[in-house]
Every structure is written in structure tokens, then in C-alpha cells.
Image (cartoon, rainbow, N blue to C red; front, side):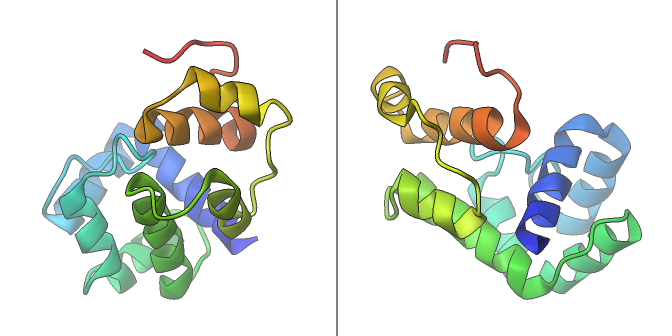
Length: 136
């Protein structure tokens, strides 16, 4: 699934300093870490959705991640909409193709901040990391 490839590329920016540095240079804004809502800042969002989107896709393709410009923009848009509270967790999950966590109601109650909720949600359901850690 191409959305999974976009998310994998985004996550890789947190793990690979060289990739992060190259992406930062390409975007000309931010720190190159686009791995989560808390890491993806406004300037990076704009750059990823704007004229640089095709260059970012080419860059990702060179590093083994296969997705289109439209798929990148769709994922970035969904992150932005979820950050702004314009779409629910369910809608966000549906767009990304990420299954709903069975304890989602408890999860929501424990994490009130939407940015923290998104980070924990993706970490637990898609990436499988930090599932037992409490939000800061």
C-alpha cells in the first residue's frame, strides 16, 4: 500500500540522521524529521504539499520508498487536518488505512492533546512502538 510507504518514509526520517539531513536540505525548512505530528511543523507541511512535493517523492524513491506525489500530499493533508481537529481519529485512521485500536476510548481519555494523541495513536497502532509508555 502506497500510504504505508509514505508513513514508512516519514518514520525513517526519525531513525536515519543522514536521510533527515538530506531532506532538511531539500525542503529548506524545518529539521527534516517528519516522522510524527509533533515533528512535522507548519513550514514542513507547506513544503511537502507545495512545489517541492515531486522532489520529495523522487528523493524518497531514491531511498527505496515507492509512492506518488498525490499519495504524499494526501497523507500530509490528513496529518494537517487531524492536527487542526478537522477530522476525527476514525476518519484519520480510515484515510491512512491504519486499523482502529481496540482500546481507543481509553486511549483518548488518557491523551487529551490532539498532537500527543496522534503521535501515540500512530506509534501504537501502525509502528508498534511505545505502546505501554504514558504520554508526557
